[in-house]
Image (cartoon, rainbow, N blue to C red; front, side, top):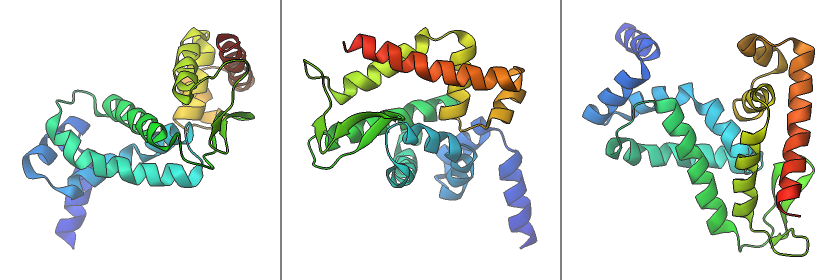
Length: 195
């Protein structure tokens, strides 16, 4: 029991790169689970951009299963960034495969349904789900730095207003304003792209 406690503490203190290297050498799922656990909230936050809570929980487990093989095959310098991209790609691929199924309900932004009853929401011309997701990413890049940073931390990394304020150094009322304005600007930008 004491040895298990020591091993657990060593895994908690180890750098991501060390755990990645040890996992590649040993294939130990215990090491991979310890590494993944550090970023499960981040992965869940990414999944929530594409799915509801239940779908996001399922995706978090599927992404872990994907990691078992993919991490062995890729050179990973920054695990957190690589995992973020892997998670986003997983969600996009899953959405593509689900696109034609009935009753798919996905929202990118609150009050902004992308699909209802399996039909893509569209104006005069059809807009695919992937177009919506790509335009959301492009629009995110157009936001002023303060808004982009605040929106990323709040929605993608699931930080509270207080945590965003601490991380960025912005005042609390500024953080709330940046998030609210960023969300509104994203919606406006996406509507313009699909007008």
